[in-house]
Length: 381
Image 1 (cartoon, one colour):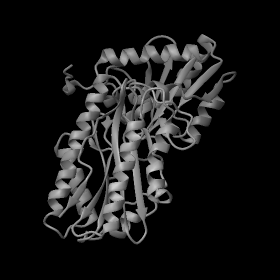
Image 2 (image 1 turned 90 degrees about the horizontal axis):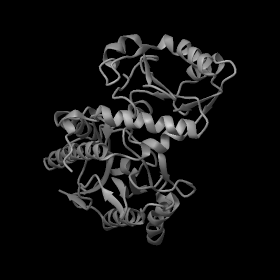
Image 3 (image 1 turned 90 degrees about the vertical axis):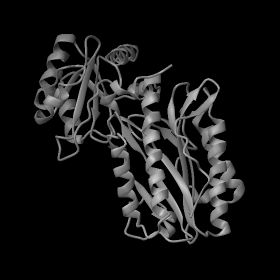
Image 4 (image 1 turned 60 degrees about the vertical axis):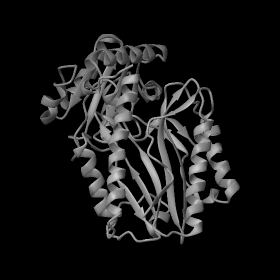
């Protein structure tokens, strides 16, 4: 089926999502749902309406949506953002200072007893406290019901994520071409990647672009690009993704640059094998723990498990990282058809270097279908 991506998500699909969430509210015994999002963690609001908050000093970064059992959702934003918020399919929005009065009016009129909050881990404590203490007789509590709804993606969403991946591929190609001339720093390559993605139609980068080379690639945690010049013999860890019409890509690659050691080649090949093992383990009904173990087993057999200090995957879509499913050794999440997630492996060894392999997939009846497809066996000169 051909998807017209120029229009993004259609109003009819947003309306279907509203109906699904209203049904879930009633099934779980909630009277309403308050959804919180900001400029970077957009999904709790963007699931219902094509609005993204601005990054900045609070409360300009707030986006709050209220959903009750009936009617369209209500969007609340900082007043200067109202014109943008009113350009969505809802065609209306309210200033933030009207949030609590609106909640109180609904609670009294409809006899609310329970109010669910999506985005509890993100919402500022002051805002949550204002809501929870301002609604007498209403139990305000975190809820994961929205996480499971947004975890499954429609064909239109998958198409937008795929295009985000295509744009990200151009950034990786630009990095490769720039390295062919030599003498580039990590910061220069990150800036180039961001420029190429926006030039190619991206809203912007989905997250901080990471270029880690040589000893930096073996760093045990996330690291922003530095002024280090990339040298022959380096391993390079690249983690990059475009945001396109509100949907993200999340691709990581390990590169062996120039004349690298035999051990560097081995860790890249092992990381690829571990990723592919995780990919093959994905099927509807499988525990996320099984996928995680499929990745770790390859690393363990090769003697590298201790150098993989990350989750083997996580949900993705509007946000680079979404709550469901989370792929860890202790996860109780179950993989379901139409979910989108990343699968990843990494090996980072001090004194040798580090690589990460990460791609986005959608779960089909038969298993995982790759959404991002850039080559993985990268030996660049």
